[in-house]
Length: 476
Image (cartoon, rainbow, N blue to C red; front, side, top):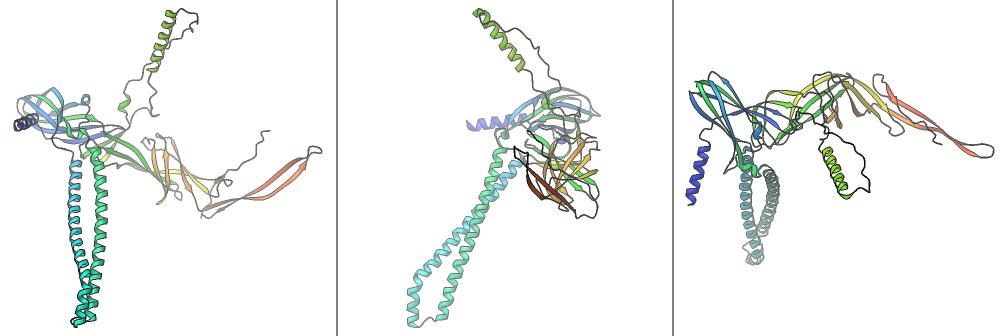
């Protein structure tokens, strides 16, 4: 009976894939929380009806997003499109297969190391047995004159060296086994993230084609899936001597959809499909008088219901969307073909690298800090929208620190703090402090302070610096 069920399952799987067509991913547009994937398949079609099935598609594919189009020398009418779930008996994710192969290699290596430990243990036990028997045997041999002192010394040295060698190798093997265990734990953790229930599920899309005229046909399937995202990150390098600033704009892309994007045309989009395309609509906001406390109970109950209804209506008004000040979204078409593997973590993709003129300024607050700080202000003279994101800051090749920038549309300005400039020193010194009595009868005490602020410029060029200090403000 089990064999019959198994055979029946294989027949169903074979029927499901009988119209499978080869396809590859040609382009991917990544949004902040999803991705638009385009697959292509080149077909040679004869006149008649043909079913074409795209198989092994990600389980996170959004069915309502599926679109089919085509072009070619063949004259084709596209008919029904069917999307369905398929349960697989084996995991198809290439990353999962790769990780399982790694685990198997580590298991094999660990087994080999365990065997080596067993051999070393037997050798150590043999040497211990010699040490147990040796004293009695050696004393008898010495008494009979069959062994001399030099031979005895060599024997003892051999036992000592072999024992030390065994312990050294044993420690090395145990250390490697601990490392293998850590690697296996990390791989198994990643496998748990990659192989929930969806790893055993895929989707397939079947499209019916009515071929009116035979010929070649370029069939294109596009769909949106979750488990993909990108974030903007930056590297800012300042060159004060040249009065320029280099800004490298990257997109950190990651996806764990279960399919690898290999050799694809990649686009990073600032659009936010999750927000929708239609502006929210306000419901009427009704005002009414507060019911009297002496109102009859039925009317009071009715009023409470009315107020509850008004509250519910106002609750249904969605919060304002986070709209970028530039209005329309921007798509960044990345140069060259890219590979983004499923589950490999974030991949840093260069969007653009721009060298921009910058205005540098120095700031000192000597009361709070003995350091002079360098700032830069630069205008976004590019055509790119710089989205809010993290940035690493350098002066030349020296790493200064991490920061964060907000949205910077074209022609807007960006101010960057570049940290301490050791080439300029500032010092605030107390020169004089004196007290004096004022008033004939009140005997008020007046305290005066005199400070001197000294600046030293060790650079080969003059600089402009803003020095900030406090002036007391009376509140009495």
